[in-house]
Length: 338
Image (cartoon, rainbow, N blue to C red; front, side, top):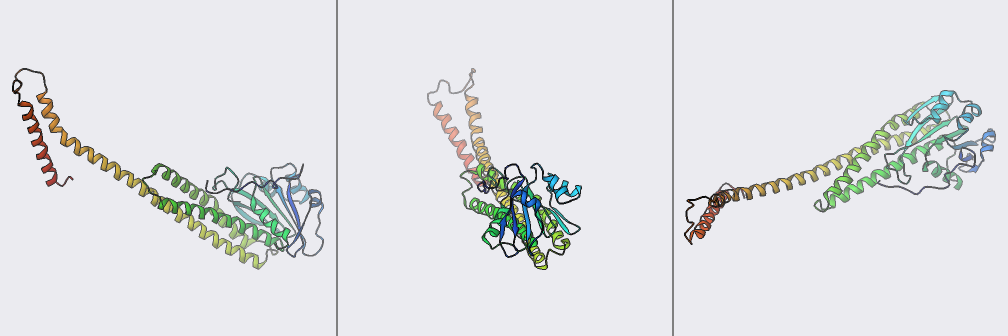
C-alpha cells in the first residue's frame, strides 16, 4: 500500500437515517447544516440557496426517498444505489446524473481499490451517495463551513471532481518516490524485496489506469451535456480537470515503464550473476576432470598397477598432475577463457 489516511469517525450516518451530512448553501460561499428530516421537507427559499445531502447509498430508505421524495425514475434510482461503479455521466431532463471514482485512502486498502461517488443534481438539489468512506465530500463541506466554499451546484460538482483527481496525483507521486528510492538502492542488498515492491507498483499503475481511464470520458460528457445551470466557468474548470487527468494517466504510463525498466535491470543482473557462477563451475569442472581421471585410474585395486612397490611413485603422480594442470592453465589462457 503506497499511502493511506486515518478513518474519519465523523463519516457516520445520523442514527437511524441514511444522512452522512446535509448543507443548505447560501450562495455566498457558506452553508448551514440540516438534519435528515429538514432535508426531506426542504423547498427552494431564498435566491441562491441550494440543498446538498450526502447519503450512504446502501442504508435503508435511500431508494424510497429518491423515487418518492425526489420523483426520480426507477432506472435512475437503481443506478444511484447500485454496486455498478463504472464512471459514467448523462443528462436527464434538467438534471445531471453521474458516477465517479476516487482513490481509496481508507486504512488497509490499496490505491487501486477505488471508491465510487454517485451524483444527482437538478441545480437546486444535489445528492451525493457512497458506500465506503470517502474523504472528498467532507473536504468540500469543510470549505463551506468556513464560508469560503462553492457558490452553487455546478461549483460543488466541480470541486468534488477536482479533489478526486488531485488525490490521484498524490498516489502517483508516492509511487514515483518509491521508484526513485529503489533506483538509488544497491540491487545486491535484497533483490527479492525490491522485485516485490516493483511488482506492487506495477499492479497499482495498471489498476489505477484501468479504473480511472473511463472517468475521462465521463468528465467529458459532463462538460458537454450538463444542463444550463452548469455554467460556462464550471465547464472550463471541468475541461482543465480533464487535461489534468490526462496528464496523470500519462504519468501512470511513465511510472509503469520505469518500474518495468528497473525490474528488467534487476532480472538481468540476477541472470548475469547466475551465468558467472555457472561459468566458474564449468571452469573448475574442466580443470579437475582430467586430474580426477588420472587419480581414479591409478586408484583402482587390480593387479599390475605400476609403481605399487616404488616409494617414489606417489611423487611421480603428483608431478604428473601438476604438469597436466599447468598445460590446462596455458590452454585456457590462450583460449581466453579467463
